[in-house]
Image 1 (cartoon, rainbow, N blue to C red):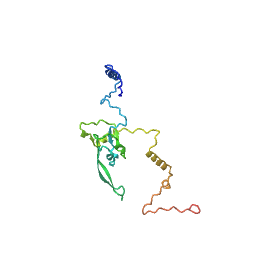
Image 2: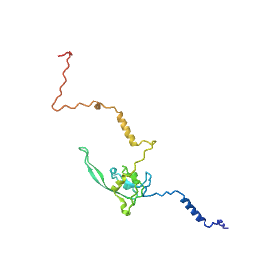
Image 3: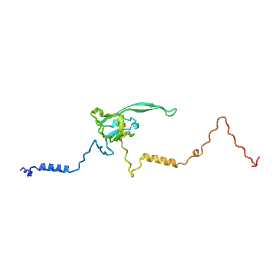
Image 4: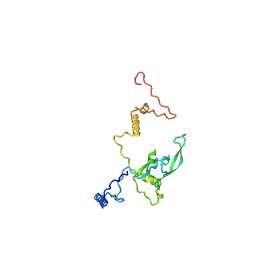
Length: 215
């Protein structure tokens, strides 16, 4: 035997319209939160992911950021230069020189992986967000523009007073304390006399009088 459908409640005509108007009236009585942009700049959080800035001096062209980027939106070109030996008889070494560093922000999904994997702190988040373009091809920004955004990167927040001391600072402090506690050696307290000039023999001291009298 089939079950009978549950009884339906009869709706009052116009109840849906009354509910909608009630929501409208409640919204009208609330304070407006409209941001007057661009006349008033928004107050952004300090860790806003706006754009990526490049600190070119720290970049070693290791290509780690480009390899780890899931969107392949980082383009890097470089060449090798030979650095002369620092000391006579030393060996020359080669280094990578950055020629191009560009990011296509039409492909970037702002995941921040490139910033996290950079071992030399060459990439940083900047809260700058006003870089819209009318042509999508103009969203590929070169290293000069990325360097300009670097100066808009906010300073890092202060460490928590209860946090552990950074390992680098702790190692440097221990080294300084060890050097300060090391007693000075004889070579530092009594420096050796300068060597005599060539062709000149130092004059020996006069012999002592055995009787101690005057001559």
